[in-house]
Length: 487
Ligand code: AMP
Ligand code: MG
View 1: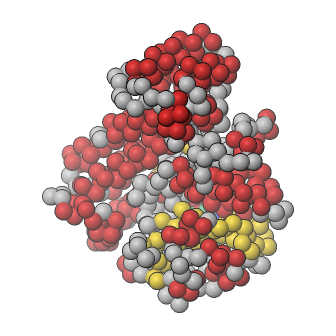
View 2 (view 1 turned 90 degrees about the horizontal axis):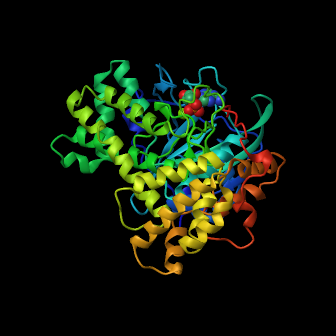
């Protein structure tokens, strides 16, 4: 375990120099205070969790103090936003403070979001408000606990600094951790500004530090791109299987590591709805829940375009062609497990599709359905769940198929079935209304609800005593909350 001043830095991205990022000091927040910290994320830096309660912790993660070895930098990138190319983006309000390596030899970027103006702030104020910082914190840690690759969050620091959005709010900072903050948009920036040398340097950096195993391949860049395709296919399969809607899948928000990244108006589905749009500025539904799958491919094509200086178009196309089959294989595998099935059968895809259609038509709670399906034997579970459906004949037909399918799957006890299914079907997810309750309390100075919700979501598969209220369908006010994309 380390104290805060014992972190070891190795700022590999900063060493790439001024063509890639600009030195900027964080602009401190007034009266910083700890809102919430993640012990699991602290452990990634070998930090003793008790240090979160010390005043210096809040000072370090609100821009008042800096390690001597930190080299705060704002990164430059570009990207496709809602399908159109934005030539100049970059860290407009976040800073890469430096890269820390831990005792296990892993490097972690420390990225401070909400740290003030940078050369890439454009019309923005460089700040992040408490509400969006809490949402990013809760989502990163909750996704990780579900087994969905994500950036991590160390803490949220609140303050008295006024920040103007639709109304006056308070500024906050979230400390984000990831092995890299390089986005698809980094490659696009150097491609479209026609800087082949820097683009090559960036590609070498990513290849050698993040995809070293690809360097052994005959075509290392192609191997790296194929790996990125595979990781994205797997990540999006997990989003779809668990009902996570990202909301702003612009290429500047897509990580080169295939992790969920840059949280905005994201949501987990309450009722299953394939057409759900969580971002209320997304008028055309470009990033609706079901569109995430083709958009994943669209984004990879945008990255492929930026990699044409290194890889032949034919090879890129072939690698892109892997996306959908890989996605489908990962998705079906997860959905089979969510249904409690252990072997694959040809018609499983249909079984899943039919169920989702029935759930869609009846507005069935996506998370609780699967959890309850594993509570008891297949026959008892479907008999109990039947009441949630409007199309009873449709559900009965599905239930008959499902029971027959379970019977063919194998002979296991109810207890084995429950254990296996509960290990993949969470009881607790980050419902928008739960986040909203925690934010409302935090905005009035009470951080206990954020902390409790974070605790509950860190063990989403384990039933926790006294936490029944976190495993309910949303109340009427909490359904279809409009989450502002201002943050
Ligand atoms: P986002 O939609 O949060 O992924 O941000 C898109 C771009 O806008 C990125 O370059 C951000 O750094 C920038 N940005 C977002 N909010 C602000 C803000 N309040 N101040 C400065 N830049 C911002
Ligand atoms: Mg972004």
